[in-house]
Length: 443
Ligand code: NAD
Image (tube, rainbow, N blue to C red; front, side):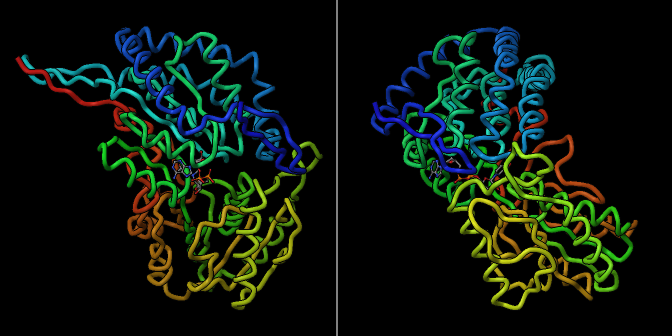
């Protein structure tokens, strides 16, 4: 049987194998999902909710194993890996209740009912950077809505996904939730199969391809794509708070987070102090293996992504950016905390998503120019403004789905991208309902 091998993010040694789902097998997978969906959708909403909660309780027995696999497969520091697993397990009751409430039929007047009906088979395709949470965010509302789900996790983190799904399947009815393993080819075969919806989290390029493939069957879509989030630091900002946020947000998850800060525009009047303090704060970070002490930046997930980050740093160096901390030379698999200033619009660091632990700074004299540069990206996921009361007006001008003032973007509301960062969203009643078909029955 063909297999997919998972590798340790630090030393690239094999960690284990999972069965590879070849494109020709996809039809059989989807047929099983269709049959299971009939049974599953016939259960009352509360029964589905109860069964899902019970299945998630089983995850407690593999909590440590899941956290260990996250750290090994994608290198996340172990405290954060544990947090990701614990959050997934602990929040399930709250979220399933919220989802069930959002999907409860509503009346319009005396005679008309609005119902939230399942769509059928939902393909969930997920990335590696939060290998458990990203899959979970999409499959939970899809399942509670009465769909069956086929999960295609990232080829970088198949062992996490395999253990997650196998454990849930100890209690879920057969084939309501299946996992298929493989790279983009397996994902493409799933998108092209006879499914009803694709819920995708991943890169813009893959998202565009999926959207084009889904068009022929008008398959429903939720697309959570990449970001190139700007941070504007105004002269009125609390500098120390802005510095702490700028560094922590640029380095979170080794910079491998869709809403990590990618570009910073700081007012020239406070720029010297800001940069000086950023370097001091960033110097406290250290890259290394997740099982070493005192390490808060992990490896870059794979050699290809490492090369991409390095190429952006080299491009910035060649075009005149100044390295205040770190350099543009790093050995695999780490990128040490790096602070670069003098970023200009022609640099790749400004134009593209980096996904590495880089603080990339530009100075501005005219606020409207900083706003224009912040908005010049095709992405529009998050945007942050640090400043006094004058920050409100700047925030109103940001072209992003999630805008925040003096804090990180993406609060308790829906997780939503604007422009080419997203299409559809999840979270809150409006998000939960995107995994179902609205039906009106009038008498
Ligand atoms: P990726 O697009 O390379 O892969 C994501 C998944 O899609 C993987 O399972 C992959 O095998 C599959 N895939 C790739 N091409 C496909 C295709 N043409 N058809 C079907 N499936 C395909 O992304 P990645 O490197 O795993 O993740 C990083 C990206 O995800 C970054 O751009 C990041 O910003 C984004 N992301 C976004 C969010 C969000 O909420 N908006 C959250 C996390 C990550």
